[in-house]
Length: 130
Image (tube, rainbow, N blue to C red; front, top):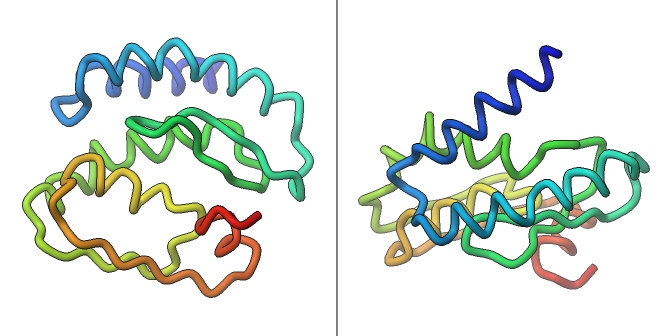
């Protein structure tokens, strides 16, 4: 029950965000439950998973994450977006799967973003070579 309420709270935060365009909210709300249900049953931490992301067709990742995209979107909206909405340059050290860079680019498409990721598997996913 607690997980469901947390998910519901994040969905409401997503839907009321000033940073997300209305059409992207609709696309996300339609596609996200599908990916969430698939990834819920596929908890192999070594398997590369896919999910919908704001303004991007798919985000790829691996690990035991169930709610990765919504968690990261809400984290950015609630905590970080106000800091990079007007930035000219962003450096993402430890880029992982690229969620921070994707969200920063979505909120501020005119900034230059430099992402550094030393982990080979994450780097492969980040660059689309996995």
